[in-house]
Amino acid sequence: MNKQKIMGVINLIHETDELDKLTHGRCTATVPFGSRYRIIDFTLSNMVNSGIQEVGIFVHKKYRSLMDHIGSGKSWDLQHRQSGLFILPPITDDVQELSRGDLFHFYQNRDYFLRSKPEYVLITRSHMVCNIDFRKVLDFHLEKEADITVVCHQSTEPVLGKARKVRMDGSGRIVEIQDSYGRMLSDYSNMEMYLMKKDLLMDLVETSLAKGQDHLVRHAIFSKLEQLNVYGYVHDGFLAVVNTINSYYGNSMKLLDSDVWRKLFYEPGPIFTKVKDGPPARYSPDAIVSRSIIANGCLIEGTVRNSILFRGVHVHKGAVVEDSIIMQNGVILPNSIVKCSIFDKDVVIEENREVKGVSSGPYLAGKRKVI
Image 1 (cartoon, rainbow, N blue to C red):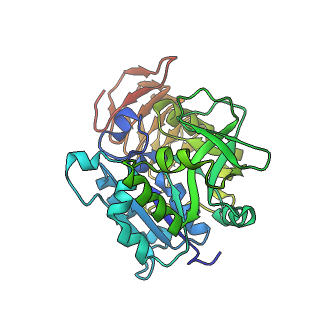
Image 2 (cartoon, rainbow, N blue to C red):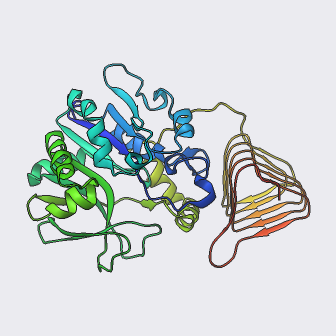
Image 3 (cartoon, rainbow, N blue to C red):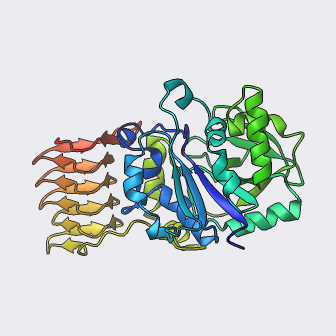
């Protein structure tokens, strides 16, 4: 793919967020995932691996942690002056304007689109965690002579998380899209990835806003399925929709399957993240670890089973962690038991405590909490 062919847009405006305490002080895009990554790492890496060298991130709220994580974009080789990474915050602090849809914010930053050289624009969300080659999406788009190509995923199993459903005809053209609360019977989920010509996007922005409509999918695409050639490209790799607590927990647990881990993190390209130097994990002679992902900097003196531990977690002697996710710098003190739980960074479990999730979902503890 010519790197000037497509510009990438990661749209964080009004992104679905039902992650409770995990997004109390951060946006969905920077929620930790998979022991040392953030959710946005997957979208960024997919774009870079596909030859996209101009990426704009439309941020909305709670984006301080995003700025810290992304930095100049160097970890994704996006620090270049000519193209590179652009973070586009709202240009207003008016509450009413902040509440408006993504088309309004695209219009406020229309000079960014007009000055960009690529002919096509790929608009994505961050909460669709996958490993995909967008060059194949462009080839499909050109072959079908599509106006808009929507990346979809087919699965007969219920989706963990909230995702729109789509229905296609025999040629692959999308004839109906419904929001996640709709009753459409379809095996195809919308992955919230839209490829189109930049000129078409600008036309949709202006014509929709002129009618008082300011949401890209609901207004500019839903209402024009009969007028435009909107096709569905089916991604056949692993997909994790991460925008609810149960979907975060369930999809995280899937990573313990080595086949899922390999497909998500290495096929068709590697997933990059912000590099943090640190010592390797250490295990005491009494440590017992099975079917778990342990990040660097951890110290394991107790028992860890079927769990994901982020950097710097300390499991003391006699402590047991099962079916749980412990984020950065968590501490499980001696003789405590943690099961089916999610702990945000810096959570400390005192000695001789027992913390368990329930059948309706995992136990969740926010940042810097002592239990």
